[in-house]
Image (tube, rainbow, N blue to C red; front, side, top):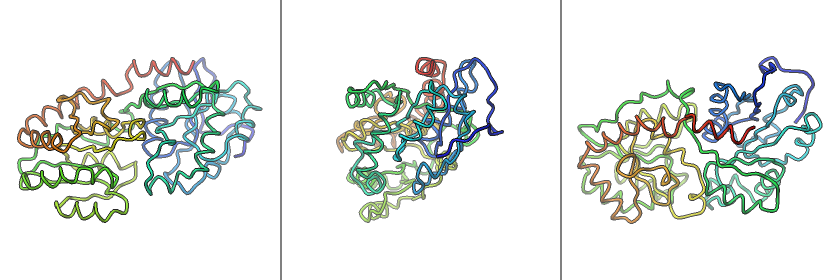
Length: 372
């Protein structure tokens, strides 16, 4: 990465008395949007903080960090009080040393959206998270002054892992923002279709989908004429999952880019979504963006007690929790036979999700406490 003298026209570096946050190279994916792009946009509405985003990158994991961002103007580095990095698997040591020569007072921050150190051993993750990459990530973390994470459980994990360092770890919950999303969906009440209730899965892994195989098959036998299964983003290279979806005549929709994701999710007209999860450290520590996305378009969920959405669900008001097969079946059957309850929950989600999980005054106070 090259540091260059002078300024770049697109950056407004006008002097003010605000705290300056420089977000580096966010990707156009859930982590980049919810943890970097949306917060920057919301902070720029405040009287206390100003944020600048460097170039927003495509979600292309074949590019290394040094290839994605090639130049940072010196004036931008001098402007920044905090420089916030996404999770980076390329060595940052020389870059941080170079930045410190320009601005010795700047503080380095890394925002970790999930616990990469306990990632599941499945193809999708292991192809991207090699042992060597995780070692580099850990070395990069130790170069930071602050680490931001979405959950308190993850915060405790990192505090234990980093207890030999002076790094401060803070929980900054993920929030939803209307600034970029408000025009991308209808925010309509999810009235149950008079012909069929649409039950969805959102980008499930093979393990997650197959963990509910007995639930899916029994529900399908009992209510075949009343329901339509919908899978948005099917499991990666799974013949068994493909056979299951075919057996229940599931409507399958391919994954889309994040820029089209919320609009596509809204267009599926789902009445409820099942969020399966196996007991694992990865599920325990990760963020709950899928619940937030469904909440803001008014879709109730039934989630595994091992899903990270558990901490956000208010049972029988914004969703349900289940563990054993009979628990899943009981709740699903209750909602199918009482569609008015689904409609009531949809209305509640639409009314409360923005107030509870949006960039409220209380949420913005987290930034005031962290970035001072």
